[in-house]
Length: 279
Image 1 (cartoon, rainbow, N blue to C red):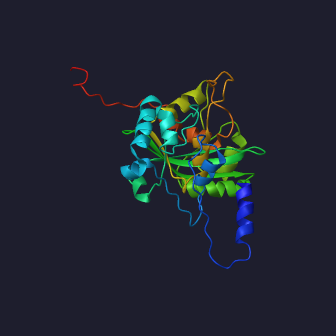
Image 2 (cartoon, rainbow, N blue to C red):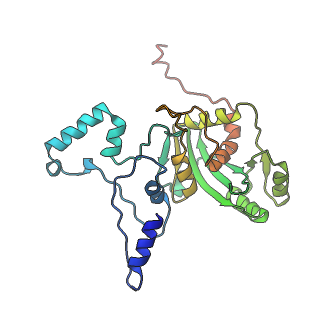
Image 3 (cartoon, rainbow, N blue to C red):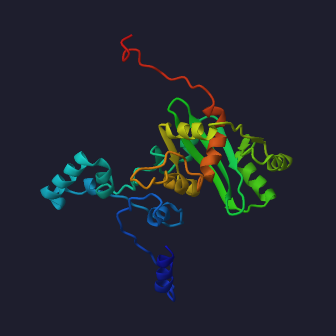
C-alpha cells in the first residue's frame, strides 16, 4: 500500500480538481493480504462494490465459461468461491469461519437487550483494546457495536474511552493487572477483573467459533474487522495447521472473550424439535 500511496501522491500533485482512484481486482485468497485489509479500512467517500459472474447475462459469458465454473463448484467449493465469487477464502486455517462483515444500522442493535464490554490491557507495542458487543441468545449471534484500539494510551484517556463505550455498563478487564483495574475504578469506570482459569482461553475461543454468526461492521469496528478476519492457525510445516490458538494479533479477540465471560460460563437452553426426534 505504501507504493500505491506514493503513486497517488505523484499523480495528484499540482491539480485543484477532485480526483478519484479506481481499484479493480479479484480479492487475494488470504484475508490478511494487504489488499483485503485495505478494503476494510473506512475512508470518507470510499465506495466498495463487489460483483461476480452470477450477475452477468449468460450470453456475455458463454456456455464454456459457465460449464467450467459449475464443474469447479461441484469439485472444489473453496476454489470456486475464490476464483469465481471473489471471496477471500484463505488457506483453510482461519479460526473464525462464522464472520459476517457488513454494515450494521442502529436499528439492528435496538432491542437486542444487554450489551457487554471487555478491555485487554496493552503493553509496550501491544495496544489497549476495548470492545462493546450485543448478543442474541436465541439465535446465538453476536454483534460488535463499538471498539477502541490504540498503543500507549494514557490512563486518563483510556478511562474516558472506556466510559464513552460502556456508559454505566460493567467493563470486564484482563485480571493480570489488578492495579490498572483499580485505577480505572477510581476514574469512574465500572471495571472488574475477568475470571481466568485453566482452559478458559480454549473454552472461550470455542464458544466464539460455535456461534451462528459474529457480525462486524468495518465502518464501526475497522480494527476488529481486520483482526478477526486475519486471525489464523499457524501452519505446521506439513501442509496442515497447529491446533493451538496463536497468541498474537488478538487483542480485540481477547477483549471480546472477557466481555462475554458471563454468557460463556452460562448453560444456555436449546430448543428441540420433538417431531425430529420422533416424540
